[in-house]
Amino acid sequence: MTARDLDRYFRTFLEIDAFASCDSSLNGLQAENDGEIGKVAFAVDACLETFERAVACGANFLFVHHGLFWGKPIAFTGVHRRRVEFLLGHGLALYAAHLPLDQHPQLGNNAALAEMLGIAEPKPFGEYHGKMIGWMGALAEPLTIEQAAKRIEFLGRPAPTVLPFGTRENKTCAVVSGGAAYEALQAIEAGVDLYVSGEANHGMYHHALEGKLNMIAGGHYSTEVWGVRRVMAKLAADTGIETEFIDAPTGL
Image (cartoon, rainbow, N blue to C red; front, side, top):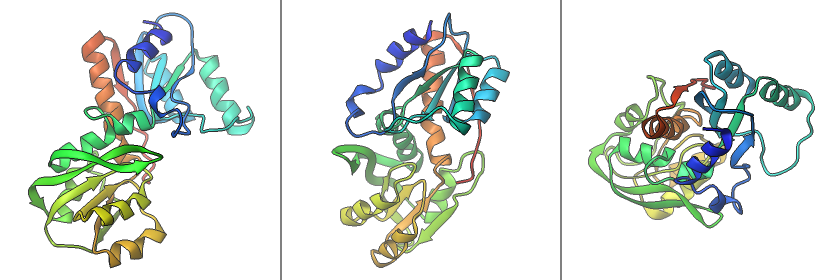
């Protein structure tokens, strides 16, 4: 398979074009290379560390959640120039899937979080520019905020922020991964017990406190490893191509 072949493959299940009007990420193939793809690496972020580690493990295609381009032209200077030079100089193709991966009902970051937390019959939640990218619903069994935080840990890394402002046992939950602190307002409006996202925000603290909302900010990185890992497993199962996950945590 070539980079273009992989682009066509990912588009069979990720709604790459459907989010063009609301997602500032340039979703899809961001850097092309020549020849066949021998190994595909997967990571959360497009950065020099993941590029170097992808090449070091023998990959010539890197799939990420956070790509290099975000809504406006960017000059090839400084850090950006070095990143692009590395990609082109080492024949490493780069593919990005941002909101299309967050939203996917089976493979997405939010679908994975909903499953780990035990949300039964999840319903769409978290409106962003007219698209629902998260999930909400009743939990299969009540969870304390501590139990919920433990369930979504990646490699034993604890959630950076836990705000226990609501009921002791949570019976309902909503999730939107990554930088979705202000979607907590939608969680308060929906009346759920627990809201799970990636990042906290100073401005949301008193909203959560006064709204009696339990909130877990599990880490932008740690709440968004799940989608790329699920796509990695699907690619390996569907095609037999060699894959590898590159863990490059930010702690944020």
